[in-house]
Length: 161
Image (cartoon, rainbow, N blue to C red; front, side, top):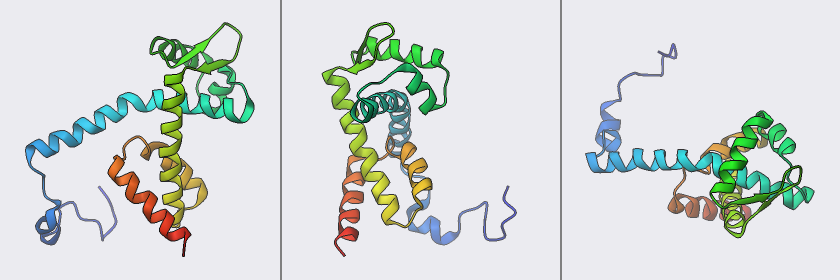
């Protein structure tokens, strides 16, 4: 419960009339299905994107670097590396750097592009760099291609002003 006097627990009559009421059942189910699907892949995409970034900027991606940058234990990273190996996204040898497979590189590139679009869109709206980076990290997995295209057009329009 909010103590903000401007916050209301019930939607106003105006918002209900403007389409903010519950959507049709099929549409509502598709919305939740899309969120579940995004949650299933976002951690994998985050790891693959980070591995790609480390390879691009540092020329190697070590489990210790991934653990420190993600704020998780090396054991957690080791489990994910096994999973990424099983999915055919990375290759590695004990005590050596990780490498992306062709499929992993394609996923990293796509994830990086989505992240870039969302980050630049948030900055174009005036969101501070720190907040934009945090928000973009979660949003990139939950935004449709249609919304990404509109975000990119908006950002390009703002840059050309």
